[in-house]
Image 1 (cartoon, rainbow, N blue to C red):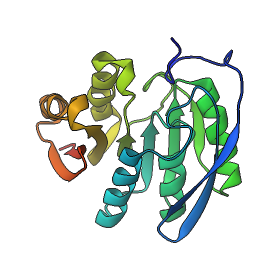
Image 2 (cartoon, helix red, strand yellow):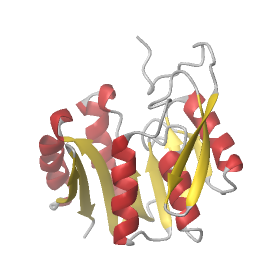
Image 3 (tube, rainbow, N blue to C red):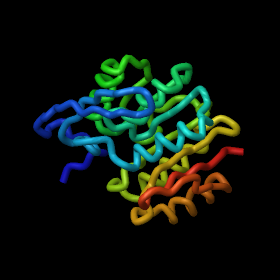
Length: 199
C-alpha cells in the first residue's frame, strides 16, 4: 500500500483546489492523490495552528517537518512574514505541491525533499513544528523528536500535534527523554498539542 510518506509519484494524479480560512486570510491549496488529508485541512493541523497563533511565541527561523502540501508552513509564514521558513517532506509529490502552493499564496519559503532531517542544514531553528506521519510508525516519529534537539537553537521549541489514541502519551514520554521537558499546552477533541524547549 502506498502511504503519503513514500515516493508515490506513480499514483494517478487527481489535482484539485481546496480553500482554507484562518485568521483574516483565505488560503487556496492544490492537493492530489497520495498526500495526507487531500480533501480538506485536517482537524489536528487546525488545532495546532490556532494554538501556535494564540500563544504568539514563534521565533524567526521555523522548520516544518513533514510539511505535506504545505498548510502549516504557508499559513504561519503569512502570519509571521519576517520569519525564515523551511519546509521538508519525504514525499516528492507533496513537496512539488507545497512549492506550487507557496507561490499560489504569495509566500517565500525554502521547500525541499528530505527524509526527516537528512537534507536539513544547520542547527539554528527557533521552532520545529510537526504533524507527524503516524502511519510511518514510531521509529520515524521518534526520529523526528530525537533529532529535533540537534537542529534547534538554544531555547528553541519543538511543537507537535498528535491524537491521544495514536500515541500522545507515549510521545510525551519520549520527548521528555530527549528534552527533559514536555508540556501538553492544549487538548481538543482528542488532539494534544505538545511543546518542548531546548535548554
